[in-house]
Length: 117
Image (cartoon, rainbow, N blue to C red; front, side):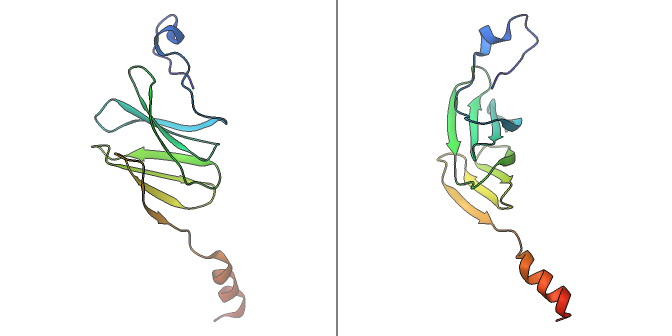
């Protein structure tokens, strides 16, 4: 991942950010601490220092592409969602999963609609 800053040679300032083995699907500034939070096709969410691109932490647990990620203003909570339909919440200070919000069971809704019960 490369962050471009408008400088003539941005690679000299930020370098290549390591970590992802597949494409980055979202990236945004996270909270007030000068960090960037990103999600990727390799089932992970990652946090980087915006000023130098240094990896801070990786948040795992996704079972498929992670499409969107964000952080609370204070950086203590990280939330992300992906292809598997699960919304995950991590502790931003240690990377531990706080809670997973599973998608509703589609099969039972379809069965109810077809039987009328």
